[in-house]
Length: 305
Ligand SMILES: [Zn+2]
Ligand SMILES: [Zn+2]
Image: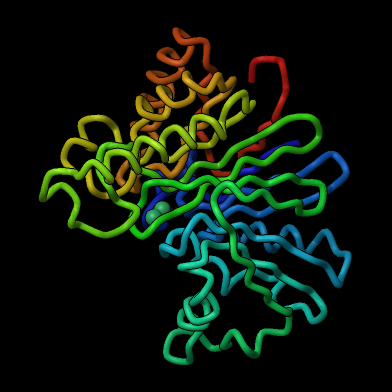
């Protein structure tokens, strides 16, 4: 398997002089098997360039699979600009949590309403299909075995463990650490003490994540915040590289990929983050790679990258 990063930012796109090297587009990765199987995970603004590449590959009509972690803007905003959607005969399956999938045609339809966009979803030539995912209920999609993982993010999000070609990769975005309940609500957390049920639910969610990541080769993780930033915004639903390292160390992961970078982090700052966590990871026997737009990683490669 190999994984290509088409957008590595969180929250909103930040193209410009300060982000040329790490990239300014929002969350989108492409996972390919040796035999050409293709999964798209998240549909942020990075999806636009991926769609152009997939169109050039030809093979019309074609089936595409887009796994969504959740439907915050930075994970869906590329969908209206996905070129294969404008090719008649193509089919695009979009996978999401039920809370999102129940309304997903309205969510996507909403962002393509005539006030916002010239082509409403119902007039797009390709055929869209919305499929519910449930945490812990695995799916077989083309060559891939896919396990959705519950995450701690406002109104819920799912990560995905993907097994194929005798190796595994996981995509864990967006998630906060497991100190506060974020998956049920927005902004209410932290205002009152957690109940026993809340604490048990958080502990179960964390244990479920560690179990799902057990022995995974490469884990792409939401490391939006640096520790000093996290202290100021603990309820925004994102993690730090330290929190990701802790989870990956427990799970015996080989490579951690830092991902969903804060839009405020310049290339120079990202260089410092990359080196700092490369060293910290090395001390724990984990290779830490910092994702950059356009980067391709071979999953399961045994040589240092
Ligand atoms: Zn996000
Ligand atoms: Zn989010």
